[in-house]
Image (cartoon, rainbow, N blue to C red; front, side, top):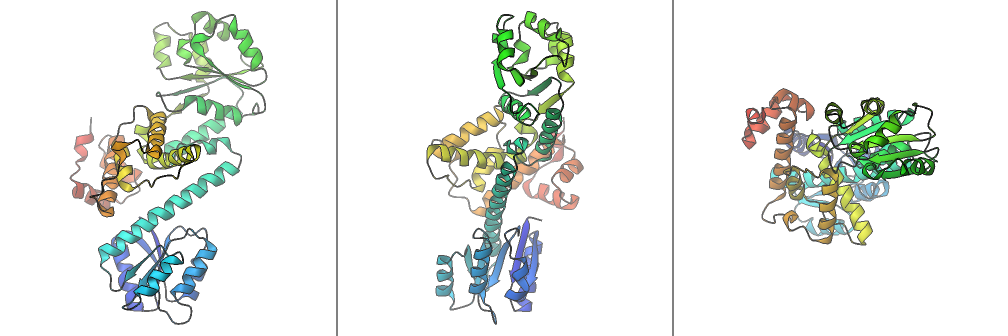
Length: 409
């Protein structure tokens, strides 16, 4: 389902017709015949939007709107108006209604407004969830990596490795945020109050190593691009008995370190010590569903840093982001977000000729293609990853002319 709508109307026939329209569009409908029947569902935690008639016996739509705004000012309420009620609906907009529709309304118009409201609600709840995670004091929760299963698995892995006392290896493609994950690993460990020292592995010498270890005493020493560590320093670190150093070594690497060992360019003893507690950061191409969430967070950050109002991230912008390969990963996405806030991203200007339905279709097509790409063209696995029934998944593929075989190796 795309989301939930609390549908409030005293006319049973109208309620049933509207609910049927929503269900056909894969939107879950919760129905109520009055404000009193709907009241208990109108809470700050409600994960949907409200569609309510204005004229109802007893407590009308205006009372419902006022009550909903008291519970949560960010909860979208859309009002249904009868003939002659347009001035009243316009007044309701001034009181905080998300929108209004005149009855009878065309299904396409109804769904367009509801989908926009559901998207707005989802973004509000996501931002609240992230703020709540930050306030828990869990450093891993603060990592901007999205909500995909891969990202949640990364957070769990970081927490587990942080609690161990051995040296650790963090690997990933360029731009995935290796140094940030290393810092989070340190902050999640028992050494969090001690120093966290960063050092480029290529610049470490036998003479500067003791100084770096003294600076990080009791804490963690992060060596970036460990594959570039000079051979003599590799040997010195490998000969230090594990557990006898006052410093935890955290190594970062974007290369295939096992291949470096096989080629004789990296010390095998040191490699196996680091590999024992390893964290791999998945690239954006492996978890494209995280791109919209991460981009919006980066836009908010960039806007705050620049003292500017964050521009709207439209479905068309999201679709464009998800069509890209992102070889630069999170770092590249962050740069695009900054340019977007500053108005320097000509390639991310929304196509004004496209309506909301067309923009949402672009996003949906991108998600389907990304799921098939990750699943190697296996439609069943892609449908499962998207949590879609197989028939629904195949119907969507047919709608966009997508063939699973085109994604098989």
